[in-house]
Structure formats: structure tokens, C-alpha cells
Figure 1 (spheres, rainbow, N blue to C red):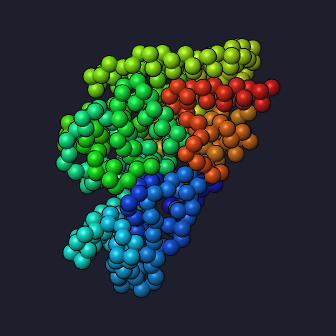
Figure 2 (cartoon, rainbow, N blue to C red):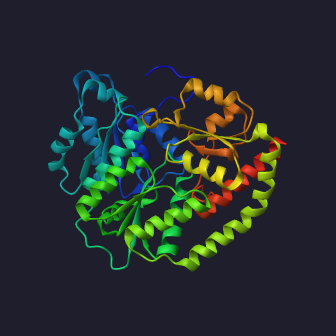
Figure 3 (spheres, helix red, strand yellow):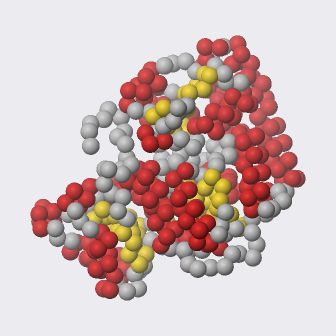
Length: 407
């Protein structure tokens, strides 16, 4: 890995940790350096991710030189027998990846010693795998490994796939999506992959009638569940009033249910009532101060376009610029936010900038404009969402308050 002025691209190992850290009734044992997991635990807890137990074996010079894996065996024994955790994910770090430790073979070798413990090796630990690919790989592996053969629930139900600790306000967005799906479609929420979930809930993934995929990395997992259980899925994130209405309409069509029009009308009217005075003031400001009629968004490739469309549609932003945080997701209308682009974007004082805590700090902008990680402060599960009807109100307030700060 090279040297970076700002946060470096994250590896597949961190992608796996983003997914696994929120799963209760499980543990992650990293065969690697103690400092790796100590930092990872603090980082994940700061982002509001709890549930899974995170451990590191530590490794020494002898382990590296001789390829000794006895520390891993002892760690599995301690977690399984002393802590009573019967689902253990095995995760490599960069050093074992370099000298070629085969975690799959180790898990197979250890399984007879721990017959009542499920050992699941995850191999996206090297720097040759990006964090986003690590998320995709881990979500798919969870779907292949954990769900039991179950019948669909009697009442219509749904799962949410892709709510992981690397997405800003992931708890709040998942809660808003679940609230709207339950209220508008009368469906029961079974499981959220993987924030605030458990092994027991993941085992029932196949019982759902519909899967909401809220990031493209979860689509491979949803396709697998569709092939295995016949569960249809919708890949989209709802932003703004019209975007949320379209999302609910698409969800109703896919699962063949009649949406509750009174619930949707009430939600829409309540949101518009709060947005309207802010919309009047901000739209007028953007018409008059044309030099600031610019919205720059940097974050996940599935987040920034929806927010940009809402800004244009509802408030009259004439110029929008979108940047994504993964080079593999860059497109014609969405450039990759590399180091030089970060510096250029941060140095431009005109318009409204939304991005990671790091980018906003560089640009000396208010942290309320944050829509992505890396973060600089502690987060919790009860912050307002960015998605859905309530997210639309929140975004309107964020932009209006930034207008007050600008002038």
C-alpha cells in the first residue's frame, strides 16, 4: 500500500468487518496482529456497530517464520468453550495473507475438534480486494452459509440487505426503510443484513416475501436468495419525496401488494408541510445567489445520485456534481474521489458541499453536511435518516441551515 495524505482505500478485510461487527451471537477471530483488531473495534464502535464479539490471536515472529497456526486453534477453543459462542468467523489480516495461510483448510481441519461450533472462514483479507468488494463477498457468503430451509412467513415479510457500518447513518436509514415498508405495505420486518441483527435472524432470511437491497454490493446476495428461495428483490435507495413515492410503488408492484394509500398520503403531507417553508426560502436564495447555486456530493455511488436528484427537483439546484468513494463504481457522470480530487473539491468555497467527515474538515465546512465516512466523531443509532420521507425533511433542514451559515 502506498502513502496517502488522507484516508487510504480500505481493504477487503475492513469490508468483512463492516458486515460482521453488527451480528449478535457470533464472534470474529482475526489471525493477525493485535493492533489491527483493537483499532478496528474502536473504529466500529465509534460508528455505532455493536453485536459481534471481535478478537485477535496476535502473531509473533515464530508464527510468521514457521507458519504456526496454533494461536488460532487456542483462540477458537477459548471463544467456543469459555464464551459459549457457536458461530465463529475466521478472518485473515495482511501478514498471514502475504505468507499464504489457507483459512479454508484450517477451518476444515479444526471443525472435527469443535463439532458443535460453526467455523466460517472469510478470505477477502488482502489489499488486492477493495472494501466494497469485501462487503459484497461477505454478504454473499453469509447468505450461502447461514439461512436454513424454511417456509415463508404467513404474513408478508421483508429483509433489508446492505445496511453495514461503512454507510453513513446506516442504522437510521434502515429503520426508516423498515418503517415505511411496514406502514405502507403491511409487511413484517424479519432481518437487516447486517446492522442490528443476529445469527438467529440470519437463519430465517429465506422466509421473507421481499428483499430490499439498499446498495449494489448486496445484489449478489439477493440473487442467491432468489435462486434458492424464490424471493424477489428491489435494488434502490429512496431519497426525497418523489423518490420515496416511486420506491414504494416499485416495492408494491414486485411483491404484488396493494399499498396503503392513506399511510402514504399522510406521510407525504406531513413531510411537505415541514419542507415547504424551507423550500420557499432556499429556492429564493438559490435564484438570487447564483454563484452558490451548486450542490457537490461525495460518497457511496448509490447515495449521491438520489440526494442530487432531490436537490434539483425540490429546491432548484442548477448545478450538481457527484463523486463516488470507490474507483470501481466510477461512471461517466460520477468521478472517483481520489486524493487530488479531494483537495480540489475541498478548496472550492462556492456552493453546498456534502461528503465525509474528513472531506468537510478539509473544506472547513459544518459537519451537519456529512453523508459518508470516514468520520471524526462518535455516532449512534438514533440520528435522523437521510433516506425516506423523514430523510427528505432532514436534508431540507441541513441545506437551509447551510444557507444561513453561507450568508
